[in-house]
Structures are given as structure tokens and as C-alpha cells.
Amino acid sequence: MQGHGVLMLAAVGVIAAFVPIVVIVTLLQRRGRLGDPERRLPFASYGPVLAGTLTGGAAAVHLGLIGQHALLTLGSTGASAALAGTAATGGLVGAAVFVCSVGAGSAHFATLDASIGGFLPLGVASLGLAPVHAVWAIPRLWRRAAGALAGMAVTVTVLAVGLAPIVAGVSGAAAAPGAATTVSLGYSDVLGVILEAALVLVFALLVLRRPQALLARLELRVADAWVGTGLGVVAVAIFSLVALFAGHAVH
Image 1 (cartoon, one colour):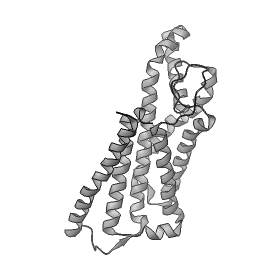
Image 2 (cartoon, helix red, strand yellow):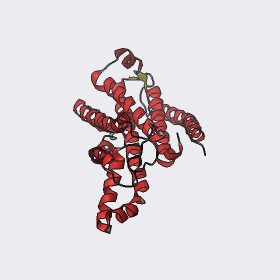
Image 3 (cartoon, rainbow, N blue to C red):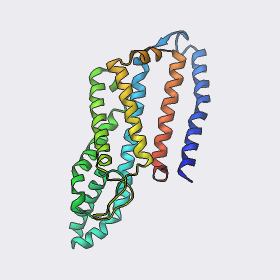
Image 4 (cartoon, rainbow, N blue to C red):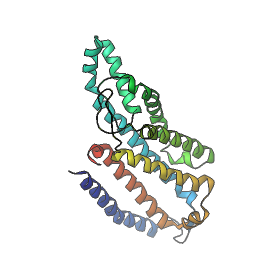
């Protein structure tokens, strides 16, 4: 299926989820599970759930991209071993190729070359940040200012590591040593950046309480807050799953 078709199905899935979410919230409200129906919730009450959801989606995309690199570089180890002369050395070269590929973003390399050695630190940083990034998918960590600040620091670092190869101009399809590549962002890359950018806005609303005009508009009746939050969670989940299972086909 073409990439645009996959995205259209994902969008339809998000729209279709609206009806059951409204039905569930309405039933909970009628049974008194949500309290006073006229009660209004500030953004600080449900914002951490959105922050955790955005972080979880971005972390899933991050881990998915690392998995894609691993699969694409597994086949290169044999060629690297032949060039290196021994299986042991070839394994080390294959591991280095993998880490460099992770650091280089969308570019995948068949063998290790001095021209991509500079991406090794970025690859190490990306691998190390992946589990830390995933921890902040827990909404409770975003409820206190200290936790939100730490989560934002991780988010900014992950975003910087992800954007570095794009700024450097290394992206695109599989590349041979020394071959030039063209800048071409895949769906997973774009989605990761969008989720991280949305998280910056949520952080500003939660901790900095800016912009105040938007913050005031986000003080919603309890049912509206539940519906909006549920729809946000479902949307992030659906588009993240698309990135994990069909991201290589979506451009």
C-alpha cells in the first residue's frame, strides 16, 4: 500500500475513535464517575497525561528507528567481515556500522568508512537516551516542576541528537562508503520531530504557564477534558504504530 494510503487509514482510525470515546465518557458521567458535570479542569490536571503520551509516542518512534537500523545493518556484517579478514573483527566492524548508522539518522551504510566515523558519538548518544526517554512516558513524572524540567531536558537532548544528522545533510537511502546522500526525511523522522515539538508546547503550558490566553482556553469541563485527552492518546498511539510497522513505506 502506498504511503499516503496508510496515512489516510490512520487518520480515519483517529476519527472513528471519537465516537466510542464520547460514548464511554458519557456513560461514566451519567453514572457519576466523573463528579460534577459542570466542574472545570485546569490544564495542569490532564496535561501530564498528554505529556506522557507524547513522550511515549516519540520514544516508540525512536526505538523503532533503532530497530530498523539494526535490521538493515545485520546483513552488512558478513561483507565487513570479509573486508576485515576475521569474523571477530568483522563483528566489531558491523557493530560500529550499526552505531554510526543510528547516529547518521536516515542513512544506512554497508561498511564502515572514515567519512561516517564522526556519527559514532551521535549513535552512542541515541542508544543511551532511548531507555531514558521511554521512562518519561509515565504521566506522574510530569506533574511536578522538577520532573517536567528533567523530562524537557531529555526531550531537547533527544531532539538535538535527531536533528544533528539532518542539519549535517546526511540522510536518504542506503549509502555506500564515501557516497553522497540527499536530504530526505521519512515519516518516522517527521513524526518524531512533531511529537517532540508538541511536547515543548505542553511543557510551556505546564511549567511556564505560557501562553496564558491558550492556558485559559484549555480549562475545560470534565467531560470535554476526558474526551480531548482520550482522543489525543489514541491519535498518538495510532500514528506511532504506523511509524513502527509501516514507517519505511510512508514518505
